[in-house]
Length: 119
Image (tube, rainbow, N blue to C red; front, side, top):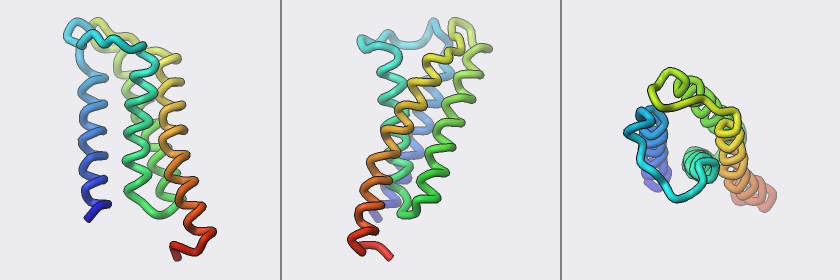
């Protein structure tokens, strides 16, 4: 039941990131935090939710790759949206968020496996 709820939240997070990334620049809300922190935080939350959805290191790695590819694709798509531009710095912030968000659940899973809590 918990994993299902986390997967639903993951899906909602994917939808929110896609919508936020594809809004035209003139319609995008002004946010008080640095743009790079917003990228880092969004992708960290996304990858934490994705990683917590699984108990397999292989699947957690696939979630991390998918989250990174989503960010790269959205950055590329922004070059075609009025008022937006693709940015390598944004892609790097996305990647850092994915790495941070995936690392904690992966380390937790590895620790539980060492203790024999999971088969």
